[in-house]
Image: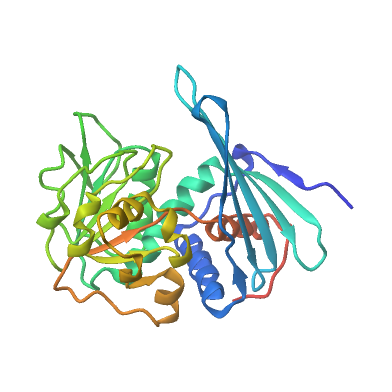
Length: 306
């Protein structure tokens, strides 16, 4: 059996946000129909506070099995974070590619948020606040633009800085971040960055997962006042926000829907009478979707159009 092709960061093709989002939509749709499998991720602790997370997933409709390995190694001069995805053709069992997935992880995180925004934000959402200014925050701007024609986009930063983001207003501080139809939290915070109760009832707040211990971007005590959605209901028990809220009496059964249910149309839409909150943790099915797209673009696998 031939060895997988190694695809380094500089060999990755340019990805169209709409194609990435569509690949994720198909993958979560496959989860809804039982044509994909999302096992629980595995975390192995390393000495010194680091870990290695394994993200497996199987998508029969796409014809791929993938597993991403992501080491997190603390260092005095800053943590070292890498990510590599090994992808197999499930028909032949052939390992197709070993892909440097650090940049792809940023894009699939933004694409997952964008899919949630497309499914949960009000159709006429016109204003967007992005809290954070790192690579994940900047990717969110590109990907959220692919699902809503925002006429006003603000990026909220902790300290004054210049960013080359056409059409984006850079705002110091988060005081006005909640005055938007969609509020995308893209920080590495381990504590609340804003008071979600001040958002408009028809607004949608999104939040991502990071390597920060007990990472959360809103106060878990506020979850009962929000309409909660997640990327995958089965993985919700590992979300730090939900763990902390459960200790206060909140029940994860109060999650209204996850992405497979939303794609399938079996989850209720937000009522617009209480602020909606979407929390993603990051899943192997997302890595499989974007890695599968890369391998198809490079001609390493052919799969029937979906």
